[in-house]
Amino acid sequence: MRSRRQALLVIALLALAGLAVFAWALSAGSLPISRSEVWGALFGGEQGMAAGVVRELRLPRAVATFVCGGLLAMAGALMQVLLRNPLADPYVLGISGGAAVGALAAIMFGLAPLVVDGAAFAGALAAMLLVFGLAHGDGSWTQTRLLLTGVIVAAGCGAAITLMLALAPDTRVQSMLFWLMGDASGATRPWPALAVLLIGLAALMPFARDLNVLARGEHTALALGIEVRRLRGALYVLASLLTAVAVTLVGSVGFVGLIVPHLVRLALGNDQRVLLPAAALAGGVLLTAADTLARTVMAPMQLPVGVLTALIGVPVFLFLLSRHPR
Amino acid sequence: MSDAALPMLEADRLALRVGGRWLCCEFSLQLMPGQCLVLLGPNGAGKTTLLNTLAGLREPTVGSVLLGGLPYAAWRATDAARYRGLLAQQQPDHFSSTVLETVLVGRHPHLGRWGWEGPADERIARAALADVGLADMAARDILTLSGGERQRVAVAALLAQAPQLYLLDEPTNHLDLHYQIAVLDLIRALADAGHGVVMVLHDINLAARYADQVILLDGRGGVRAGARDAVLQAALLSEAFAHPLRRYELDGRTTFLPD
Image 1: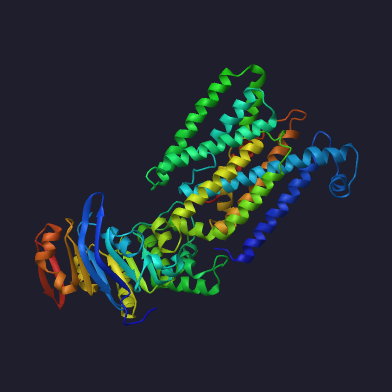
Image 2: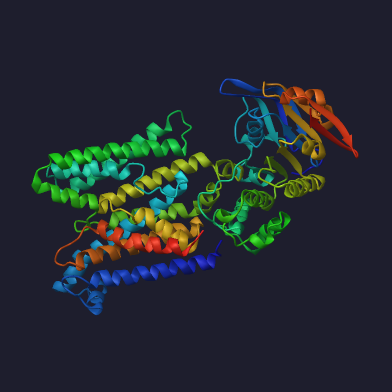
């Protein structure tokens, strides 16, 4: 258990890393822009092409990837507590599957990007309500039942996605695949999602210690004064909403939601009061860094960011795991 | 709240039915400060269900449970958690955390919404660890501990919670003989200091050694509740456990041995 001061120090360090990754993301690209030009574009009201690129292309994209990474990492941490399963991630309960079905259907019919976003969000909510309704059953849902229902709904969504990919005209298949792997190039309106991330984190922090207690088992938590049922329901809804917003923004980027909570846990321990904000920041840093790499390593070609998160995340995770022999 | 004249826990014409089967027919009891009540019975008789009902975790089918003179519905969850603590039968181990962190979880009801464990809480947690013989394990990861050590960590977490009334589901689970006696001595000392204790035990002889009152469930809905010597009789125990038992007095200790 870290003291409050140590916790704030860790959060401050991660916030500094966030600023550093923003500086990199805004200056790197097929048009290199110096730090001072970036500063001028953001705060000096400068005009010109470089300033326009920073303000209208790179800043929304960097914010979108940061927010998406933060949302997914936080949702993953919550799902792991909720399902008491270290293998849980934000997608395990079928949220991203539902979003993908909605988004891909919209892309397949050539609808506008805004409609694609709307369809993704509607699909995510539909999957969430479906899983919750089915798993709730007689009112005494267990983690196993919730997990199984989610996995089955996700599998059904997977089949629907494959079907749509097989039926879609060739010209649309590539944008459908990019959506599936996570693609930040179209994310031009990240500000509502940023608000969701901040509000979600602010709403969670007062209950973070309750989550520590919940990890000690249902009966122990009840006897320690936790309203377990209400807390679990709130966790499920919140984690699902965060995931829905994230996949609507960038697509179903893999690995961030599974690996970042584990990375933070290995480095800082399992106190949710540190873990949740640290995971949000670390997820943002990882995804923004991955996206900046994705659009620079093979420029002018842009890689799907989900590929990069896996390529960075897996070795880092394996390294940390091997450093902590049990 | 710890008025010595008032019972800490009362069951009034309590009866429990789970899955269409009656676990215990109507009985009543009162637990006064300083008393230790032991629940005995064969596997599946409903000892844990009864303990959880007494802990306010589930509603009784018939009758009522009063904690400190009030029904659980009248307690704020946090206030109830300061008055009564529960040692659950099983300790989950899905994520790693240090022994000290795990024990500090017991301080939860004593901290406000934004509170953070302070030096006083850490002192209490370390003292609780010392009480169960784990003082030098505070920094260890619980996932590296043995089953018996984890059980003692859970007992320490309950001690750190510092309730008036202790409810324990098989506190001797996974413990070797030395620690069975050490932990039960610790619990008995809590009762002698004026706390209330209700615990589920499997061992009739440990029940005979530590209990003031006994509730014997026979697994078919029958309940015997009362003072230790009125309930711990060879005939009643033999019937409840479906095995003949004989009573001996060895050096002033009541002992039951299977035939």
